Image 1: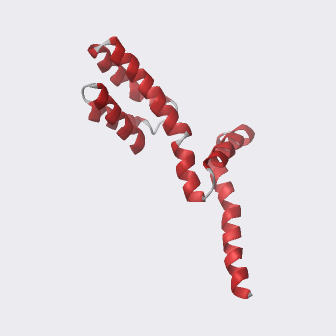
Image 2: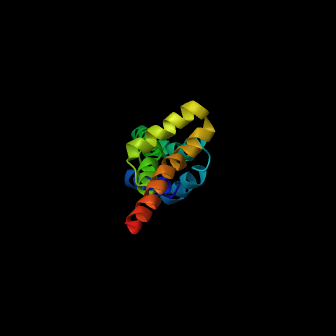
Image 3: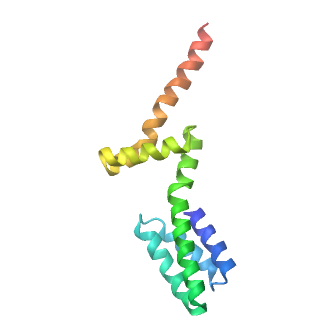
Length: 132
């Protein structure tokens, strides 16, 4: 949420859209709502940008699409990969696979399911070294 809001505020400020920081906060707040939040967050900025120029409005739409894609498909796998100590691509594939197999529960449980074997290996590796 914070990353989406900060990226949005910075990019809107660069584009010269008024109330960039307030719009960034709005995006961070609406990011709580899955899928719909990104669209709700972009509507006020596109309306304000359209008062600037059609080009600014188009760039704002492209900006929101880019930030949404980045915040959905790049940032979470990297952060979760660092926590679980796994490759981001494996995290992304696990979430996609879990979603396809079990649905929403699979998406939620995919990363913890990947973490369990890592925890067991770390636990037993330390115990086996101590006993030698």
